[in-house]
Image (cartoon, rainbow, N blue to C red; front, side):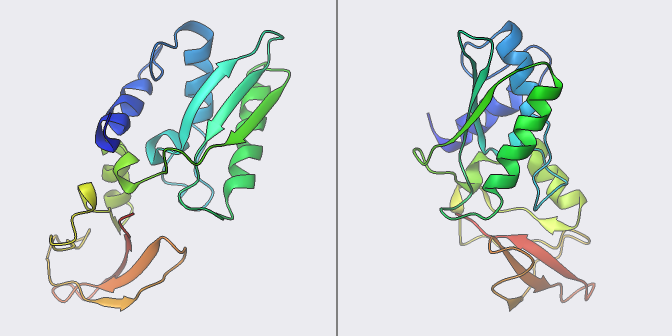
Length: 178
C-alpha cells in the first residue's frame, strides 16, 4: 500500500465507527479518540490527519496499545504526543495505555490526509507537494500565486521553511516534503 493509499485509509478511519484495517467497535472508537488529539507543533491538525497515528489495539486486560510514527527520528514532540494520547484514552475509560514508537514504515508527508492538507492551507501554511514532487511550484496559501521564494530553509519547526509571496508580499510557512 502506498503512502497516499495509507493516508486515504486513515482519513476514512476518521469517519464514525471506522479505523484502519479491520478494526471495528471499541478499537475504532479508541482510534477516533486518539486520532482527534491535536499535534503539539501544528495544532491545526490532528494526529490522524498528520498521519502519525498508526494503530490502536485493545489488550486482553482492557488496556490499549498505540503505535505512533514520528515525522522524523528525534522529533521532540513524540513524548508530548504520547502523553496527550494517553490522557485522551484514559479519559475515554481505558485504564492502561502503552504508546510505542514505530519507525517502519517511516512517516512521509504523503501520509497527511486530504483533510489535513486543506486545514494547513486554511491556516496559512502551504502543504507539502504530494509524492514529494519537487518540480511543482509552491503556491501561496493566501492568493495562490506561484512566485514564492524561500526566505529561510527553517521556520518554526524543523519540518517547515519560510517563504514570501511575490504577489501579495505575505510571508508564510511551507511544510517540507519528506
